[in-house]
Amino acid sequence: MSDVFISYSRTDQDFVKVLHQALMASQYDAWVDWDNIPLTADWWQEIQTGIEAAHMFIFVISPDSLVSKVCLQEVDYAAIHHKRLMPIVHRDGFAQEQVPAVLRRHNWLYFRHTDDFDTAFKALVEGLDTDLDYVKFHTRLLVRSREWQTHDQTEDYLLRGQDLETTETWLAEASEKSPSPTPLQRSFVYHSRQAETRRQQQQRRRLRRFGISVSILAALALAAAAIAWQQRQRAIQQSNLAEQQSKLAFAHQLAVEGQTLTQSQLLSQQQARMGTTETSLAFGLASLPPDLARLLGQENPRQITFSPSRQFVAAITETFDLRVWHIPSRGTALAWGTVADVADVGFSPDETLLTVATRDSVLHIWAIDGDDYTKVAALTGHTAGLTDTAFSPDGRWLGTASEDGTVRLWNLAEILESPMRQPPQIRHNRPIGSLTFSPDGQHILTGSDDQTLRIWDMVGQEVGCISHLAPVQRVRFNADGTQVGSVSGSTLVRVWPWPSLLAEGSGADTGLAEGELFCP
Image (cartoon, rainbow, N blue to C red; front, side):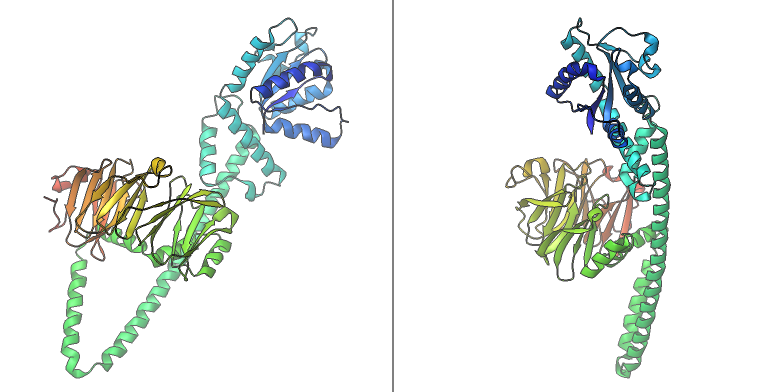
């Protein structure tokens, strides 16, 4: 794309060369047709493409340019595509009514022989820089709209995901700005939204169908287990029957106790179970494009992790190899050797970093640039294996939890320059199995084998603590950041409103179960 397209008469070519050199010296890229080539269809198509791809359209006004058929065609084409027009006068000797109406509406800049070139050029640069980001977005959207139109409006060229949401926001704010969106741009965004809605509906239908399949398989598995259990029961000797009945009674007692969970807790428990490796793996594969799902399926992954926008997916294969794919390119971008000691794989919020936490206490960091991966750091300092990692919402901080009972907060800007620098520590009395940042990035939550959930500020000071009846396996926020959930023992899920947990002692609003208290 060019910054400006210069339309002029050949008679004014010497002046345009001077203007072009001044623009290039000021770091502006100008599209100028220097060759007097025949007016063929290919030539005019090249002119149209140059106008579409330029952010600004400069028209050099002179008696010759105002009677040039080609110059006037260029003005009309720029106006049709809502280009930002900047008329400059180089030579007098024309009537005002000769100037196209779309140019008369704009302020003119004067570059005549009697005018000071530097003063006029300064005013031109100020005009070029005015609302430049908006104009550049307008140009990019026009180029993509034209590409979609040229390819028979196929869905492959439409916007989707975050790109579509950003464009819709720009379009909503563009009603009072110049240049205004063109009908083609509006149609392009409208059809993009329609296609995105259909894609999301299809994805939901696939998930529902997959969920039904999973339920059927689970029912079959339960039926098979029941048959096996019955066969085993019949094989048990009469002398052991009393012992087996005692065990069944105890299992029934545990099941009855589990039924005392409230409805909200049961929902959270279901959501927690959906987070197990097997179910997450299945649902992750079902939501992928078929060709990528087949690719992952061939690897027999034990675990998969998606980046926030699902542009990347990392998988630990059946043979304990780590593979990372850039989903749009459908190719293997990174293959790392045996990683049986991997505890966690994560992506930064902006998807520029990949972290691999290992049980030998090392955190490996890779920089991501499209399909390119570069290892930038290997962080050490923990004295036992890592268990969990988390990025702050703004991507400035990285937390690592370890079996050594500490969490370390790494400032990413500092560690990428000096990986040996040791960060502040947060300490429990026992191994820490989970950590997470609050949605505003002002607090950190940790869960430990010492049967506590603890809340810390960003300087490592404890500001809240809740005792549990068993080791805390996981702490997480819900999607909108209004609740905190913890999993203790093997399945028990507890949910509290956030930020009520910061008000230590207000147990009436926190939903504490019997036996679960604020720490002393």
